[in-house]
Length: 472
Image 1 (cartoon, rainbow, N blue to C red):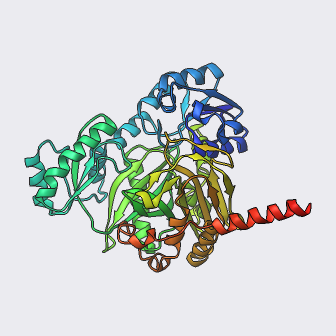
Image 2: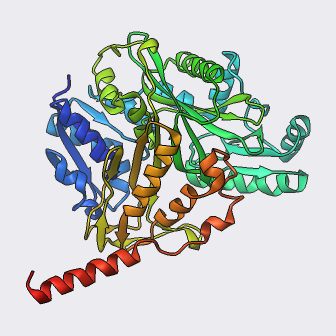
Image 3: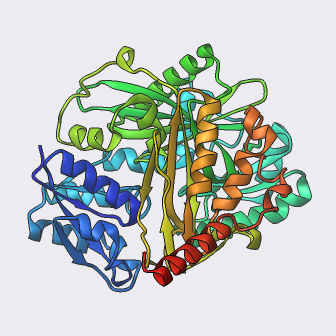
């Protein structure tokens, strides 16, 4: 086992990795920018070093990070998610410098990061893919031809990267002509290349992903699925495990396809195979994420398997220690991503000082967060500040527990998505499991809310003032 691990990330995922290392008796090294100097993860690490320049560049400088790792004597580097987790140059540099990268190989990251190549590989392996182009679309004429063959609507997608950038939907020729140039420009800006491809656009599908673990000894298992259909602009808001729509037969078929996808990619470590499921319960491969996912806690909660620990153990050369038959799914879990955003203002980011912070508790409640009272949320990073995860023995219990937990959660000083998420919990269709990727777009009434929790703050302030006056 490793003796010291450098965490090449920040925020809640850095805290999550440090906790896992602590339970494995592994010392940790954190890196931080000046903006992150007072962050929770910096305080929890055994060692911490500022990187720069600026709030972003230091987290992206692979040579400086690896040089630091060598200098402080680490055995391995965990990239978390985002930043460098899917940059194939990072594990390659680690390999050359004799440091273990906690994740898949550089070749696998490169292969799966190229969505066109990944699509070809899965198609060859017999895994269903959406009808579309077999390579990058080079001209409008070619785009029009492909769209005519597969039928509108179509989706234009970036060949690399993710997060919904470079993604556009076209429902006719006129929209395709304008969307193609926009998608290329976004792709070039975000990922440095302008390659895009075209796939058939599914109306109102479910976004279902399967968690994979694969060791270096040829053992591959899946840990069930997560339903990530509650999204805005292709960004996930809520994740649920297991899915409410999968039959036992469909779960088995998709799980086997996910394992075959991992085998086809020569995959090791933790990864996620993502699918779309249409209204007729046909499923299609869309991509493979070669890292730990933001929503990994819901899988941990229903299986009892610590994914981050398994990542570290697999990277250290250990076998999984269990088979597919040993994986048991118990109850339900749901994760709400609490972001420092103003939903009423087109989800605009909200930065500033957290003036009050009261988190929920009780049975079946887990908080993966990185903020506290008086913490200053910077404006230069992703807006995710806390992940609220709840579990229950039934869907109804899980739903009610999440609603209660959101009601208890108080974060002041910045706008958050908490009241918006509460509206989702109370939506009749959501309660019944009647949702898909179009849910948010079809529900403008979800924006009708007041700022929950203000009366509680007022009562607390009055109580404190009265107590002080009477000398309690």
